[in-house]
Image (cartoon, rainbow, N blue to C red; front, side):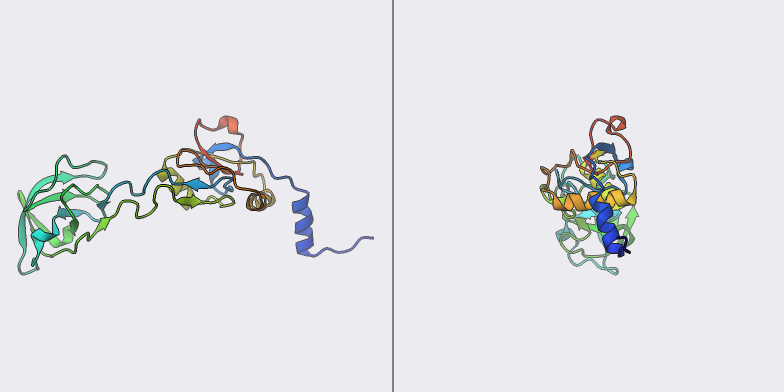
Length: 224
């Protein structure tokens, strides 16, 4: 005898009749909106080194004790550290290093003075603040520590997740065919119920696909 179904009953019947697809490896751009099939562990610290949170000057806080807007302290600018480069020597007493956001802190420096609090005068700089120790420094591992769980099976891959996976190193992800929202829902539930796959490190992760693994690059995360 036919009878009307509730929305939840209809959803249950549809999901029970839908087979979860196996994971495949896809490039990051193809992983968006898919479902992660494996746990992802960070293979390195993020950031990988102490770095500057500001454009400004790397200094030794002790050199600027007592500095103020009406009592600036002059330091010699010894060198510059641009983003993507590293200092070639340590910072000495009485020295400052011009530094850009994201650049690693040179050895010997322990604080950053933002450029708004500095006035460059040739080979030296006048600094008008006394920074706190580690001020404007992003510490190594502040975002993610090596070995930390970053993503769990069943996580939907959005722009933030793609960005995190890319920052950790992999260029692809393993995924399963997800041709419709219903299939993706089934895949997420299956992933949540099943025993987790062996955890992957930053060099490889797992997600469900929208195209065949044959067209994906040689290394990647894993998805449904």
